[in-house]
Image (cartoon, rainbow over all chains, first blue to last red; front, side, top):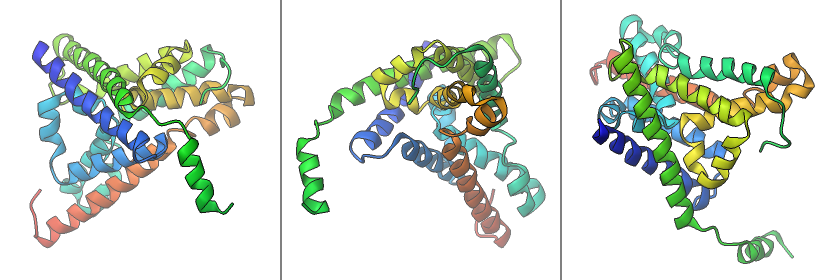
Amino acid sequence: MIFSIIIAFVVGGLICVVGQLLFDVAKLTPAHTLSLLVVIGSVLDGLGLYEPFIDFAGAGATIPIMSFGNSLTHGALAEAEKHGLIGVLTGMFEVTSSGISAAIVFGVIAALIFKSKGKVS
Amino acid sequence: MDAKTYQQTVDQLAPKRPVLKNCLTAFLTGGIICGIGQIISFMYMYFFPFTERTSSNPTVATMVFIAMVLTGLGIYKKIGQFGGAGSAVPVTGFGNAVVSAAIEHKSEGFILGVGGNIFKLAGSVIVYGVFSAFVVALIKTILVQVGVINW
């Protein structure tokens, strides 16, 4: 158990270092960097590489935003396997729903209870 | 001064980014967030009937909840100043972007302000995530149906 926490720490940390290098060296904006990581995640899942990566790294692979691209592709592919081409559209949000629903629900709740503390960049 | 020499002057005068230090703080911050995520997913596996693979969904939702509380209290901004990409790349950064946009635009009302702007910062991630997932899944499905590869 301690071992898999350490693996999650190291792998997740390394992905964030890649993000930081895209910020600092490639001079991308955060929005460009995160979009790029999501696209990389979905391509990796298309190649069948992301599931083994999750088996190895656990939360180190599921917490970074790359896994968002992975789970979108994964849902689309799982439905496409059953229903053919139309499944690509119908299955898209099957696996990802928790992240987006949680973000929307908690976003509205936060707007209800918190006040703006000056400019948020 | 034309655009090229201007850019050169800017590059010379702009402060050098401390890349190594930034990478170290990003590693620590991102690593700690993912470590916490691993502990939360262990709790879901231990107390609820989730498996190694299915525990990632409730874990992501929990991390977004934590991000909401930290954003609302103004703590996530400080984590972001220290951690850089380490706080932006994990899903908590996505939650922070949504929640901070919601709080920020509250003054414009709940429909036009909160509803219209909640994905202002995080929208590009969803748009290009969905679009790339569509392209990748479409290519793979066609390749399978043509018989080039298997599922």
